[in-house]
Length: 320
Image 1 (cartoon, rainbow, N blue to C red):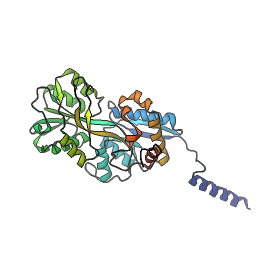
Image 2 (cartoon, one colour):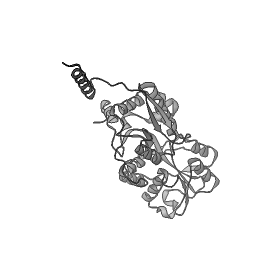
Image 3 (tube, one colour):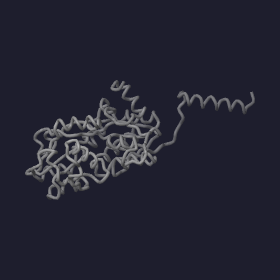
Image 4 (cartoon, helix red, strand yellow):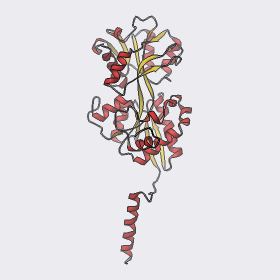
């Protein structure tokens, strides 16, 4: 057989073997970018922890945590390919996938990897406030996140579910730290803060000022969850902060690690696996990670799971 034909035949066989998975191609180091939140946020610390696991346990890959304003920016950067993985709240993931405001077009290749830890909606007033329930907030000034932020949108949803027209309250767009300070100073009547229970801003507010939570009624929690399944009833447990003496019913969402179908099934499988198998390393960075389990990793997600993550959950027997 002529030498040229022999080489061509060997090349064809090699390509076929690689396609069938019997021969693994060798890759140079690949860099991954994982977007979290602002540098003071828990998501940024979590993203950094996952990046360290990738560096340590997935050969051929290096990962970097990138600070971000949050969910909306992360979804947009996933669409353009500026990041490989990013943290989103489930409401933002749903809106991005379906092209709802604030997104202009659907991101149909957006995929969920795993739930991380819970984000309760903290609703706080001063101890001597006459506000006892959501219904009492008509005509009041409410501190929440920036326009278009998940915090702002969820605040409006909660009020609507309680029968309060959002147009009949005054919203002030503030960061969590500004929000709690404004409540302490008497510049707002209510503080709505969507954050993990490790919030330094809320801890400081609870320690230094006479404040209390406004609980959500069982009826409003049920109604909200029925319309928005990714907004689940939860509690801020007694003892979480100094002034919390009893469990506080609230709406909770889970932070969601997302990617796109551009990422290979094998790589996302490996990232999912090392995250759960080396969870104690993440807990050392952020105690909230204790909430993460394979059993809740793929539950109540509003967008499709990435096939790589889905494979892991099926292997663990927590997904059919």
